[in-house]
Image (cartoon, rainbow, N blue to C red):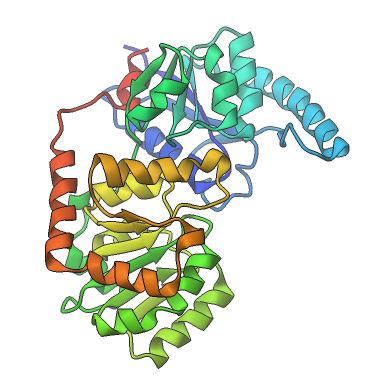
Amino acid sequence: MAAQRVIITAGGTGGHLYPAQALAQQLAKLKVPAEVLFIAGGLASTRHFDRKRFAYREIASSPLLSRNPLKTLKGGVNLFRGFAQSVRHLKNFRPDVVVGFGSYYTIPILLAARWLKIPIVLHEANSIPGRANQWLAPFADYVGVNFPYTASFFKGKTKVVGLPLREGFQLEAVTKAEALTYFGLSDKKKTLLICGGSQGARSINKLIENCMQAIKKLGLQCIHLTGNPMEAEVLSSLYASRGISSCVKPFESRMQMAWRAADAFVGRSGASTIVESIEFEVPGILIPYPHATDRHQDKNAEFLVNEIRSGKMYLEPNLDPETLGRAIEELFRDKDHNDSLQAIKAYKKRPHQLTLCELVSNL
């Protein structure tokens, strides 16, 4: 059997690129490893893509719709340029399938694949699909979805495949002791992880800044990923002045260590956050990003809270430091924490479902 040739296209954020790279890693481990090439805009500059590990080609792309007529014109020009570049790359590489993970960065290559009659598989990580995937779904052979709810947005082409996780993002890949040592934290205290996704979250940082008394009262230690170097400096000093053990960073490239060290978390509800918190069995307080397209993070959070029955969701406009402090206290209450933990464990024992790697490799 000849090796499969797969092109993967994904946008510039971690939410798109991390599962895309996880798929590439899984395809490389098949009995007959696939040959994978990434093609999209933005790959040469984003910090979320491993350019040393994966072969890639850059194409022109930019947002297609804007209130600014000049930006709309630029989007149209770059769509044409990106399409022409993509046709050339596709003819040179001759893929068996093209897999798209959403965002406008992927549109030129997927349109070119359709024009050349190359099979297309889309993956939608969020509960409510992004615009690019909604536009392109009619051209796809299959749409793999992370949340069952998402299937209602597509007509007859969906498979529930979950979200591919990168190498090392498995509970058994690292011990809790190793993870705590990595952050310089104690194994005698409970650990709270605070993170705002790959872009950080200034409003979450501010909320935590004003409820440190509750954290100190509970005797917690913190891993806090701020998304911003200046805020990391300020918060690190605040934790120290309050006598709270902490490791504060702008960004963590080894997020599996943060998840493994944590007993609970406070964060956004991007798809990766939801799936990784389940894999590492970490109950959380979810604060959906209020400006997410179609408020899809609200639906993501509802899946964890209502379907799995783990953790709590608070809408940011209704949340103040006092409420968050009480929520953290409740989350670490023995019965509440154990109930959430058992709910996650029960969900993980569900029957095996088709994976995206299996879907792609069986085409």
